[in-house]
Image (cartoon, helix red, strand yellow):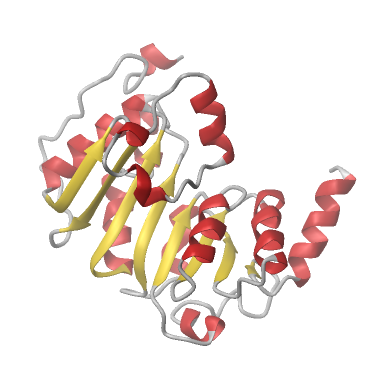
Length: 241
């Protein structure tokens, strides 16, 4: 392990805005985020936050909301944590965990809003269950969110975007809006000009940025006969080897 990573891990270990294994609040933070922030403001969670561009950007823009970036990569979380501390943004925290373990750190209805920003699209058919918009994840989000809470997805992957739309249309959701060309759409200004590291990379390669948001219409239930439509390079193992 490089010296830079070791230094970052050491700084994470003492940063008040990083919750990770080994810290006293690691096992007690579930249901206690209001106490951590010292207020009852709405909680917004960014899944797979990477360097925390969205968590920090939105946290600076909306000081009366609390933002929690989640990622398993401690060296990436370090970047967002340091920026939040340097900018004196106490309404931002970072949780180091795998996203499938989210329900170990949030109580039912503790979250008001979720951002899924440029997740790994998991294009192989055999990896469908690992996609962050698979029904098993949607079921977990539903349990953890306040009624009427908004879920956002931002991605460069056309396959993941269309797969997600099919899932959402199959389960039936409320207030669904979507576009395959975010920055040419009416929703462009809603993002406050915030761009992630990977977004800049994909935009430079000519990929359009896709965006959707929705609210749940009751507990999500996928029809037994649901079969997603394969997209070129996405959804079948043969196409993605």
